[in-house]
Length: 389
Image (cartoon, rainbow, N blue to C red; front, side, top):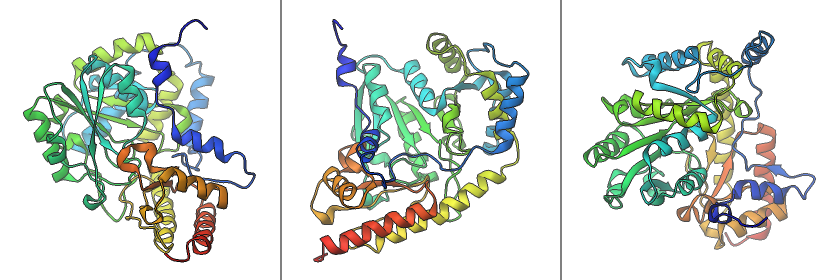
């Protein structure tokens, strides 16, 4: 190899996958690193894909997505928000991650600034770097229930700020933005003519009777801002790689042009399966939520009974983000200690940004039995190794 690009030498590696590799050395490791449902894709969705393949729906399709898929997503948002959405405001993507990249490609030039929460989903960093833009982190505090605040965003805005990324429900912190949070951020962005990308892939996973508040519920927001969504978490379809972006038609047209050079189209038979998911009965979605809620209590309540751990109750998504500062160690060192001593693999909070130091991210997407065993192992070790806490 003659030369390596600067990007290839500096692209941020996934600490989540790094921990998973380290954990593979033990035969009895409990893997609590990846944010992936342990449920299988519902049978009706799989059957639709199988039927579509049998019907030879396996050729190229439109860059922007199949019209029927666009119509299904547009109807979902029309029903959910209460204002009309047009199919031309929707583009099918390879999961939510590609949707995020397309929005960035449509907006950003090298040197532009993107505001993200700290801690935050790590893949935002790599995508921003890919386009030569600059990451501007905004600290998010446990004292504010890990909710991004408009007042904190205002302090970092410059004439180079082009995009604010929101994530609600949030990975890794399990927090949600309510209506007043969202309205304050949108008002700030509109005053400065800054676009917002709202990553809402966990919209179906909200607990304690609370409801998801979408960016698009704010009047006029869909004219200048974007919502990214995915079927991965809601319908246990992580490997299907199907998501979408919703925004104004001009932006969608531009993003569809990028698709020509990135992957042509999302496979038609996968889009057909996604239509079944979106338009069909939502019984499985409700069942998943009930199960995650049970698992949430196993992890959050269980951790709070372990000396040295302090964990806020997860409001949305399927992550706990416990404070482990009482142990006086870096989150990486503590995660490695837990892995070595208990064979429970967790992700250090520092993997998600500077403000993640002193925390761990623990997904509760595994079975109740696995989660209870993980809590029991950690508790037994901590009581023995840290008797002073």
